[in-house]
Image 1 (tube, rainbow, N blue to C red):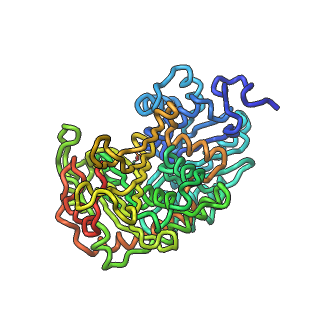
Image 2 (image 1 turned 90 degrees about the vertical axis):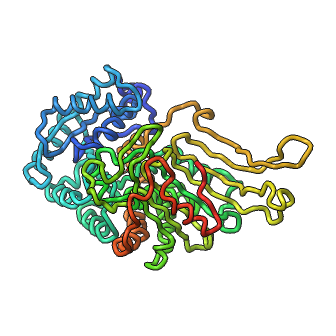
Image 3 (image 1 turned 60 degrees about the vertical axis):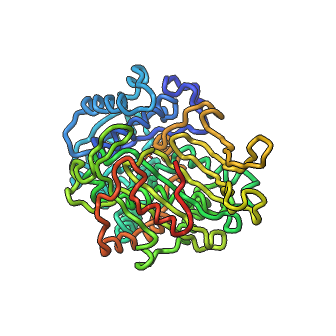
Length: 511
Ligand code: BG6
């Protein structure tokens, strides 16, 4: 058998054997949509550029709009030129482009699925894709059950090779719809075929969180309630809702970021060490800790949650409109674009430690971090009488944009007197490795082709996440929203956010 590196295909030159996927067809539902253009096709292109695509592959767009193969190729070329992290190269594009095809069909038309199946079988025979199929559902959650059912009816849930299905987030709208979607999925696919995406798990710095926690001995004894005082998780964005007003106005920040990305960051930070670094073991531990998050009851929700919505303001010196005047957003919308939450994890490791989560659009900086704050020393020898009060040690995982890890420690200021000040011990990816990390979607698409589900969320994780979020959504429906807008674009959320955390004698980190 040929070693992958020796196959005469320019795309395969330098292929790393350990990450070599088998030939496959990748079928994108929602092929003409935003996600395919901005993320999926640029990610596949970059995988090809770095010799990570299979030796033979087809990318088949499946959508309602009429297109020829040529038109789909031209559209994707433009998308890659616009959104790829690396500049498009003519040669790589040409050998990539010829693998793109299009099947036009309504999503509920059995004939369309029949044609898709015929095409897939033809490709298997003519191009040697071995019956391996990866379906990607880049469509809104309400369309997913029907597509899944149609795939089942067309017997596209099984083949001579592997059949896998990736589902884009959001996975349902609440606990009931997520349970229903899982149920319908399980009628057609085995859980081992299902890949629910949360692209934050594909971020390099999130993967490093596993390594940092479980490959370093110094953390093990201190990673618990005895030493950790509180944890703050921030997902701050400068962007507004861009072209996604319609989706966002029905979602809101709680569904869009907290239910998935923020809770996954929380899970990776707080999970127990798995016995083995494998997909089942890691996901068992994440599911376990997510289930231990204490659900908020109706009365607590008023105190432990806070919502905001941006009005007009300025970001980086540019005037930007308020949320209610964004395209396709209801002019009287009460959808939240900012959320702060306080959660507790009811297990022995974390009992009593508050977890503060916040996210918002149109905040002053794009910044995602997890800040773990440790207790102060038991007795303060320095900084007495309120002069130079000690600041707690804080370990910060900078997820983006400037990936790294920072430990804040107290230090003596050089000189004759005994003044102290916090300083940072810093690790930055850029300076340490000098290498650009792949985009999250690249990592995840490759993992799915390789059949590694570790960085995808399992059904029980998604359900546990919704079990935390759904009572909040329900309570918010019954408690009138604050007078929106309550923060102007370009500030760190509503004024009440400071009060929210000050009640606990704490403050938000200044980012
Ligand atoms: C998506 C949300 O899941 O994540 C968007 O739907 C958000 O609203 C995006 O902007 C943020 O992702 P990233 O990778 O830019 O932090």
